Amino acid sequence: MSDETYDPERAERLVEMLRELARRIVALDRDGALLREAPWLQRALGDARAELFRYEVRHTFDTPEIADHRRIVGDAAPGWTPDADHAPDEEDGWPPRGH
Image 1 (cartoon, rainbow, N blue to C red):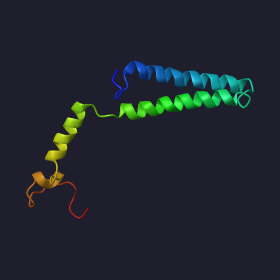
Image 2 (image 1 turned 180 degrees about the vertical axis):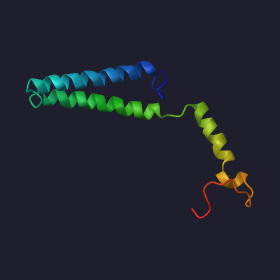
Image 3 (image 1 turned 120 degrees about the vertical axis):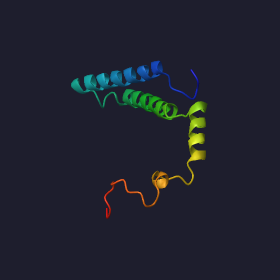
Image 4 (image 1 turned 135 degrees about the vertical axis):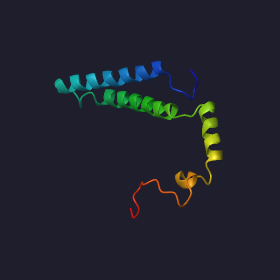
């Protein structure tokens, strides 16, 4: 796996980590032990938070191909507006005049 991406198997492991954390919290609550297990909770929440952060950063990372696509669109877009394809006197009926 590339360091920049977050593969589907790792994402599934993260989901399972979160589910296990949720199950453990429910069980601790049921047993009245939530605060007694504060050190474990801090570690588990920290691990989950760190992995969620990695997911967020890597999941939204642009691969070189996507970055190139964004560059192409960015290079083509300056000065273009949605109305640029219409002559000023054209009327397509939307939005209604005066709105």
